[in-house]
Length: 139
View 1 (cartoon, rainbow, N blue to C red):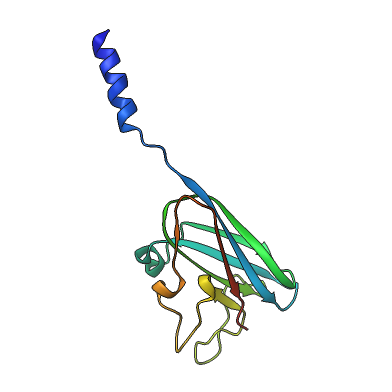
View 2: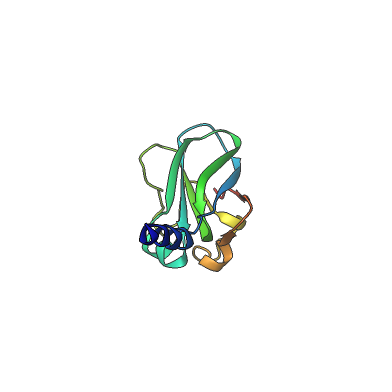
């Protein structure tokens, strides 16, 4: 009996509550209602560079702005990237120089300058409070 009590006490000390939060991301200046928006949430720079999304959603485009919500997000360092698939082919279309011909953007409204912004420009922390972030889409 004493061993069972000691095991239960040890287990209670090992279990640490996991805090999960909500990340709300506002995409602004969407040109029209055609197509879909592909939005990816990345946890950490390594996963971002490897293209391994922590979570992803596809939402119908809506002229103006939309809010995308990610629930139950663990504490950590995150970044968001997205694109507006205007022709519904599932890819971001590019021109002969490799520049996007469809809308795109990043968290923290990070700007493109001779290539995508670096991870530090678009990263944000998730901790004890819900996170609100935004981006104005680039066309």
